[in-house]
Image 1 (spheres, rainbow, N blue to C red):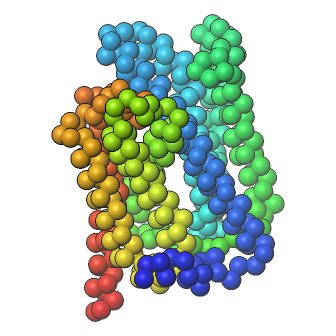
Image 2: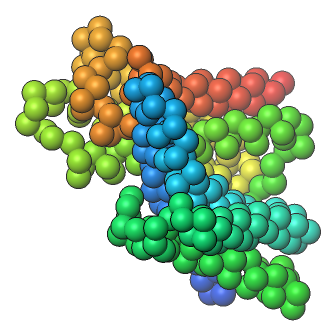
Image 3: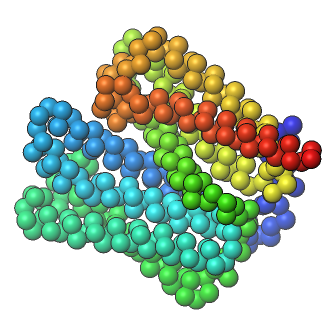
Length: 334
């Protein structure tokens, strides 16, 4: 039944679009996906640098940790700058109204531009002070910190282009699908948890993607590796399905699809969690030599809280959606 709701074109806000609206929707959706992937990779770079700093403190080298943090600041800021790009693209994707579209797009792109300027000025000052020996030091990337400067310039350009676009009646030019607006009641709380859930989805995507390239599948921990990849993938797919499929349904269909989709999501999440804890065999730390390379920040403490959070979040979201669907079902019967 849920498949009928999800894949019936007549139930989607995308139904009945003309060719121009379809092209705009495709461009915006691709922009959301691209910025999501970029945000995932910049998040992983953020976490690797943070893990190095934490490791230096643990090894009683706070001076080394401070030096690494100062050198890595453009990497930390690049994640938040990329996240602003994702929020800008998502503003077009949500498209609640012309006023909200214009206001939020300017705000999010402006934040990205400000962070970009800070990155450029910071790199120049650090180079003048000799903290960077060259604009191309070659670590942690081949072109660092020059690549951070070029990346910042890209986001400044995006912000300028958007302002030119809106100055010439941009919001009226955009006629893509208008999705159901976010309810005013509890909007702040909902926005907070949606942002937190987004970070979990980014973390899960990185965990799965990086594992394909950096995990040694011959080290004797194959069941644990597979389980960790599975929970990472489920965390990512859960947010993708709710955002790209469920939120594309019209209001009435969403009310009908909430309960069955939440039940399916809960079953999958619980099965994944059971598989993960069976693979741990009672050792909540997990084999750190495997997990650190996959999800670094999870193993900076004595227990991999971050990975356990990745396991728990799909269950929490599914249970919340299940209660929401039950309340809607009760109200509908009344």
